[in-house]
Image (tube, rainbow over all chains, first blue to last red; front, side, top):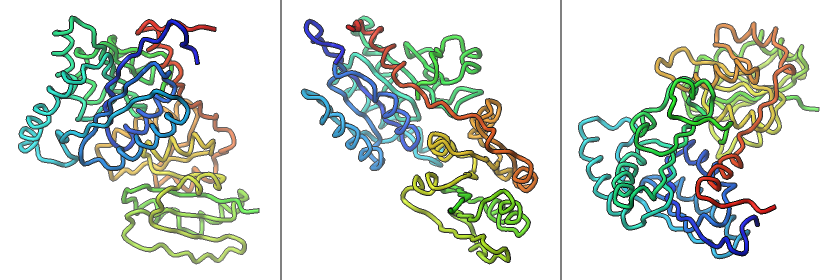
Length: 187
Length: 169
């Protein structure tokens, strides 16, 4: 383990789980993080049973390897289901926001990590408020999907000026959006 | 030894691919290239494809869905896939030659971005249903470049730096 002795300081993380391919990319992204990133708070849509199972499986494998690991799963209403009409989306988004703000302030994570889609938007706006109240101690990180080669996703566009670090997977995309970072393909 | 071409359409409805690939002319090409089996995951296909084949020593099988297609990818010598990112990346990380067939009937398809890029980088071959036969005939799939998987370690390093954890060697 790289961090022993004096380095016992831990970093709490809020990990926003998307769905399907997003979940897969997120779990692969965090698979190399050290044991100092604890506790890990996973936030996901309450309709997404498959992601919950995947996170449980991921954490059980991690816990076998490392002791003193903590994680917790929170499930919030999804702001928009696929094919949901834009009118009802307004209402469900309000509900999602009502859930997101107290959760973000209660958890008060050092890092908010997300990779889209919808669920992360209200959480990141809450994160921005938290950041203002904590004088910038919360770092928000958005990691764009490997599928995005030519344009940013809608979630990424909405969060472009909100997050502290936005990673993309292709250099050509980075060139179009100067605020993004490319450090090699990370998912 | 079995040399299989595995075709997958995921959860999409891609009847034109199933239609175009279950043709005697295709079987002949595949057999001439040393393949002896065609396995098709047909997904939401509206019909059940014919598995009849006049060629000796060439078999056709299909199924609709399986919980995981990982085994079928692993056992295949060539994967023919729709442009879905999940299927593409699964085949590439399994180090299989991959032919992506684009569904022209889908208008708004941002998944194509990834297929186009992978083609540009020489990791996959890419065609649509109308050029499928020609592509299978002329393409040398052994010349595709291996795909390098992403490196999440780079992200872990970035985060360690950001938070101020220092590496001890």
